[in-house]
Image (cartoon, rainbow, N blue to C red):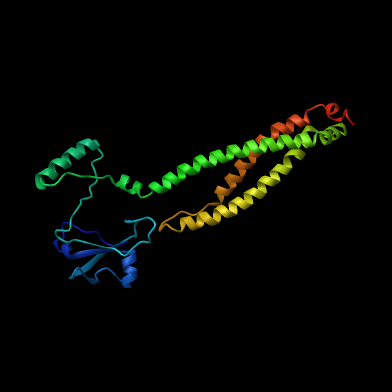
Length: 252
């Protein structure tokens, strides 16, 4: 953000440090570049300011961080592999160099993307379970809706017959049978969307960096819900609408 990174061409950078935004805020430094900060018992010069980044738990807020050099502190090295070679080739070269300079310790390595992904293992599992349970809930709901539509059509058989005799079109009959289910879906959507928005907002607030809930999520949800409702109900509604009114009215 400000200043520069460490440079091998500058031997004095062995006493330089970088600060993140949180550290600058805590120290109340208006002009951090060039400031002298006492760190680890030694005066250090601030040469750069970097963006805040999540380096620990994604649930914790970003902590103030000082990046500097202390001889003997190195416990690991971060390297970017050569994209023109295979990973196995790169690892073989690294192992050879490692064994040359540190033969008494085993060669251990981790990939940055795997380490990062492990931070969200719980969320991935939760997402997979949510998808399965959502699919199961939709399937059960459609079965219940189909049964309710069948019962409603059977109960209103005589009403449908009278409407047909009086000249009602099939589209009008289909709409009359379907509209009550559409209203129920709308009411349930409003209740479910309100509860979901409240709890999802609270869940996202646990993360330092998080997305926002877009209105399009709810638009797509209600659209899919309406389509599923109409597809499920339409079979019974159309079946009742095309039936012969004589069969339903002959007992009257």
